Image (cartoon, rainbow, N blue to C red):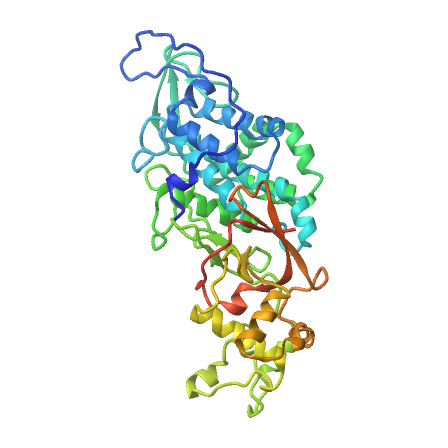
Length: 465
């Protein structure tokens, strides 16, 4: 289960923020709050736990973590002070705005570790860009929360109005909600603050990967649905942080106060993911990963799986259903079975055995000694072990392994954009640190083997290299 206890597990030693100074006791007028430093605001046990979680799932070394993550977070909480997020709801408490931001960032950092970004890049390139894309996700979860500051009228003890721009209020303050109705003002204010808070060094670093910096810019300027998978990850993190059931709509925008109205297009994670987004999002409240969209089209050879008795050319819908492993609409209505290939093809026999085993539960993914693992929207088939297992269970001669493997490759079900075989590291802990086992095998889209979301989720110990 993806719950608070699992998320806040003990992890590696985290770079600490500066210790909070001694609080000065002073009388405050009724209804006023004392300005607090970032270190004071972050000193609570709960917030320290969320920071530890962020560090545990960060891909950055300590010095970069301090500069790229911790410093912007401290700037955000300094501006957020003791403000609630909204007038009503679970974050309508003093400090609710900062709690919302920290929880969302922590969940987003964890969820991002299950993705291979950028979508469609070779695995070695995705591995090289992992830290950059993790940073994009963290910023996309952290900085839009600043838009909620637009809904507050903050008044200092001297009667002057305070605007959340650079630092904490200079003296005790009180506030009231004044909903900002203009989405354009919200977006422009949020974008202005975001680009002031992100360290220039981080922007220069991210600029080494144009797609990463473009995606971040798109998200922070308010076009979140167009940021694809990053929006989907953050939307899911918001749902987990707020404890919103999957069946309920997700309203996360700062467009209004009492009932935030803008519905992010990525909140229902299947509909929010387009063709150019990755195919995973973590399921709500469980450490489960759901395939949401194919990354690459199925090979053209699969289109030959149409029934030879058909009297017409299949339309696009039928072709898509066929490529996804389903019968056409006509066949579904008549109950006909569409033959996929000759039964004497060893590759097809192996493929059918794999489908039947995975869907029936006789082949269980993600076992430490297993030949099948789930990772980032793909099924990893460990070779040659998976072929030996098939030959053993079907009482076929062991010497047929090479011809069987070649027959499987001819089917074209596996990902082939960087050669035929892929390498994975199977670690002994979820931090993916220390000793690991090196595995070789094939990557097949999970949606080809497990229809819908009927799978056990990613193996948290496995990464593609």
